Structure formats: C-alpha cells, structure tokens
Length: 185
Image (cartoon, rainbow, N blue to C red):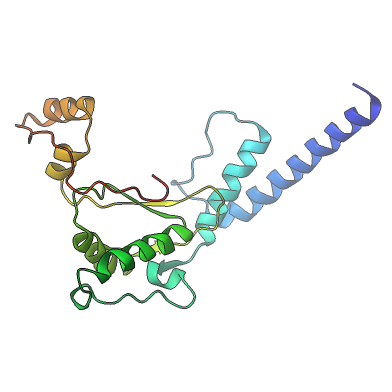
C-alpha cells in the first residue's frame, strides 16, 4: 500500500466517523426504547446506512398512499369499469404503485376485480410512512385471513409449523386460480 492509498483510507474513515456522529446527533430527538443501539457490531459504512434509514423513517410523513403521487392518484370506482376496461386499468395501477416502490404480494387468489377493489378501497386510503430510502419498498400482502394464506401461499414447512402451534385442521393446499406476474415479485 503506498502513502496516497493509506492517506485516502484514513480520510475515508474520518469522513465515515463524522457522518456517523452527525447521524447519531440527528437521531437523538427520536431516541426512545424502540431504537435499539445495542445491535451487533457492523462496519461503519453499514451502520451509517442503517442510521440514515432510521432517520429517513422518523422524518417521513404518514400520508394516504393516494397522496404519494402528484397529482393525487384517483382511480375509477370498481363498479364503473367494464370487464374489458378492468385488466388495462389494473395493470396501469399496479405499474403506478410499483413506481413508488409499492409491491403487491399474494394476489393470485384474487380475480382482477377483487384485486382492484383492494387497491381502491384499502391500499390507496391507507396512511403509511413515505420513506425515501433507495432499495426499500412497501410490501402489501393481499391476504386478509390465515386460511387463504395457508391454502394458497404457505409452503409445507409453514403449514406444518402453523398446525403444530395452533393444533387445527388445515385447509387443503391449492394452486391459486389467478396466476399473475407482478413487478417486484
């Protein structure tokens, strides 16, 4: 290692330490029992990324998801869409949600109309923190009950574990009727 490389590494380390101190200072007003600082030792770079994501979370506004868009995302009511219009509008809506890093999971048991209704009624009206952290996404599970999850999405290990924990009869495992390929899945 030559002198310039050694000097550059020292400068990088100092910059990371200064950034770490700044992030910790900025997080101080938010400190409470929910912020765990006893985490296992990680690299300074990884710790700074972790602290930056915590700070982004704390500062993020909680808004209805429809307001994450400019202009506000307004959808046509489900009952106003014909069976021909619905798949096109649904596809466009899912793409818009994905553009804001909202990923839909466990949708294959729902018809297009049922999924659209969930987006219209539940997702767009739900207040969530709009966190601007690269590589992070809001994942929305479109399963409203355990039986549906067990029937269509739980693997053999999850099914067995659930049965052992709850001592219940499980629904039969089935292939979901509406297989779809969604962005982010």
